[in-house]
Amino acid sequence: MQISRHSFTLLAGAAVSALILSACGGGSSTPPALIQQTITFSAPSTATAGGTATLTATASSGLTTFTFASSTPSICTVSGNTVSFVTGGSACSLTASQAGDATYASATSAASSVTPLNRQTITFNAPATATVGDTATLSATSSSNLTTFTFASSTPSICTVAGSVVTFVSGGSACSLTASQAGNSAYASGTSAASTVTPPAVLAFSTGFGANNRTVEAGKFGGYSGSSLDNWNCGGGSPVCGGGADLVPTVTAANSRFYYYYSVPSAPTGQYTGIFVQAPNVTDISATANTAGVTATTQTKMNFTLGANPEFFANTNHNVAVLLTLGKYYSVGGAACNLKLLKVMPLTSASDTNYTLSLSSFSVSQDCGTGITTASAALGISAISQVDFQANGGASVLTQGGLSTGANSTVVDQYGGYPTTLAVKGGISFK
Image 1 (tube, rainbow, N blue to C red):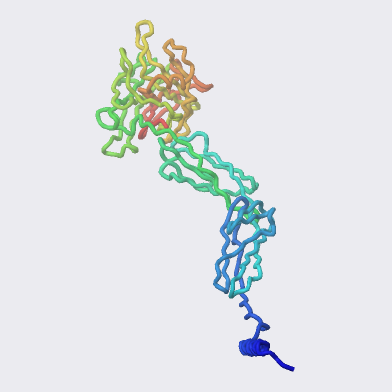
Image 2: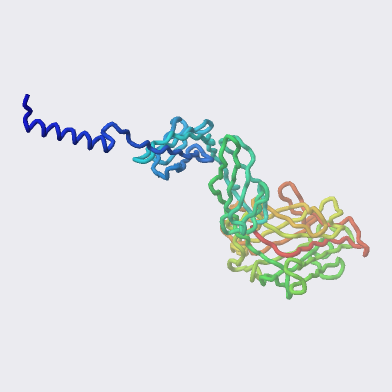
């Protein structure tokens, strides 16, 4: 049989090709195996319902692209690498996976979980009103029903906080307060929004007593007395009257003191002893025009320090009157008239004692025909020009709020008289 030259050449080419493929390993060999990788992943250490967190993971391969997922979408959801915590109280289960590449195989997903805390809302309001020098007890509530709160002031020059008590240090600016709750195993900590209250600025009617019968603020001060025994005006004989003082700069303004006494030799049918202090730069109440003074627009209280002699305090009735003379001028029947406010108060000690009176507790004792019936209405239209402290008895008694003033006509001193002494120490202020 003859074989063609062309056929032989084809067979020879095929054999050569087979030999070449065989030498190179042939088409039947397998590719190299991919390298395994591991993922390190942890859910956020803390979580709060309504909050979010950024998820991160690392791989032994050094690859940095991960896919995050939530298997508890009712508790938490994932978008990209951000987890959002929907509710609290149950576990949020998260996974991280890595797809691999031409060298590394995809990684087995790593799972981790965290239980979000419930968010709590704190309801807190600063006191509705505040007065310099006063304190108030703070309280708050929380949607968690947890009851332990921490209160704080961010304005310590205006108000300070100790425990749940706020003290108002100065006025004219806002006191800013917050309430915080530490939370527990079910609730996250929470802090209220700041709540504010502005104590009115303190108005110094006077800060102390100086020479020439003038206060530090140049207001006039002095004393007066009288009874049925001396035609209602003590002339220095019998009965006996007079006063004395510890004055600035010998003592500090806060320690300065003015006193005035009146001593009767026998019980009169009526008597009075008083001290007056006038507003800054006021030395007389005008009989023809308005008199300057201190305008208490937002202030609600009056503060002063008052003392008395032990004989007067030993009386059953040792109530005294505090009188405010307002500066607005009225003409009534051709005579000058000023609004007057009255407060009758009991002394709590013969020693110098600090007193704070609510301005709303004063009543209108002289309205000059205006028909004004409340202290707030009177103070709303006129400044305070003069403050008086009086001990009145018998025919001179003053009555207000169910209390009547008194004076000493029963307790004898070592000189055989019946003295009534009043003393004002330091300043008078409205706050």
